[in-house]
Length: 472
Image 1: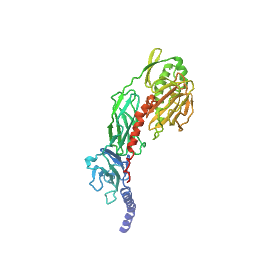
Image 2: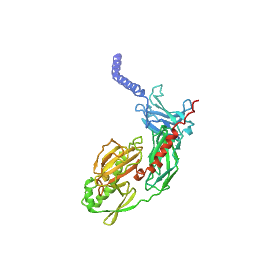
Image 3: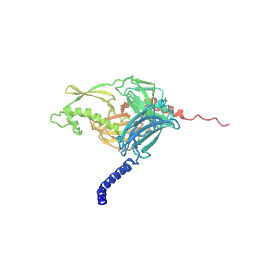
Image 4: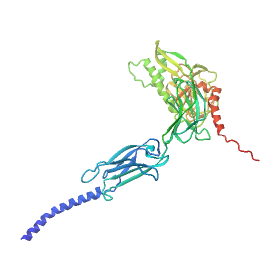
């Protein structure tokens, strides 16, 4: 009887034992699958790092979605030298099962080679991470990655090759300099206006040049200097001897009438809100202010990728047998019903000949724009290389297409009165990078020789090797 009862008890315990075994197996599987997971942490840098300057930022994100991060480190060292730990952070476990609380960690650190005893040249930025997996006898999965970098804390050296720079307000200039290393950006800074530099004009690739301008609103005390930023991000600067000649710009009053506005406005899709209370003056001011700025930006955008060669040669041609109707830099008061309603500057030269006169290209260049540009009407814009452009506006007909190379004197269109023009004429403009400059300088052979070609020739001649000894 007792044996029968014991057997009965054993049979009743079997489900409990089975349940216990199942629980044990589940826990074991949890540890084997989850706590012994074998995926190491991963690291994603925010940006590639190749150079370390005097003060560089390194940032990125560690992550471990499996067992969580336990420790992350960032180290910097020169090959064969002691490691500098610049980030070392540990994270708590979640508790009894020791899974990590931190699944993702973003960071940003500053690297200062001088503080770390790093000299110029090769170095390593390394990242290391561990997780809460029970792999490796409880030490977790490990991650390690190195980034090979170059320590460069020296600013680029700039040697000016052009010595004197005499520039008119509203005029252009040319600067030429030599760099001691490759750079990612260089150019001439006039006040806070930057004009990019270009290499490739001379046999020495370290020699760069830039056309630059002093705008009509910049004073005689405006600083002019050359700046260069190297591949590591170090910036150097060099002042250049310059003298800015003051110029006066005439003030004109231009009368605006309702009949003029009603005749001109239909060609503009102004985008101005169409309301019953929108007046002729509202429409004119929208075009003369907002549309003028948008059209300027369209011209600048058309010349964004300039040719890295000098396409032009000699003086620029002028519209034949034409008289000047308005000059560069003229300040204009716009009067409506006897009151000044707007002020603008005229940033080109208006030339009038007979109606529908053929318009020649001022110099050889590539057509970068051929079409309608708001207040400028039908317009052709030529790229002459290294950020120098000419434009021909208010045309009644365009004779060239975008991408076409035109020679000096080749006809680009026919004069007209499209855009914001009161009559048939040509609005001729010259731009240096994104600044309009006085076209009259480019019609003057003496100005071009003294300010452009003689400087280029002097640098070219300095690069010609001296003749060797005469053989006996």
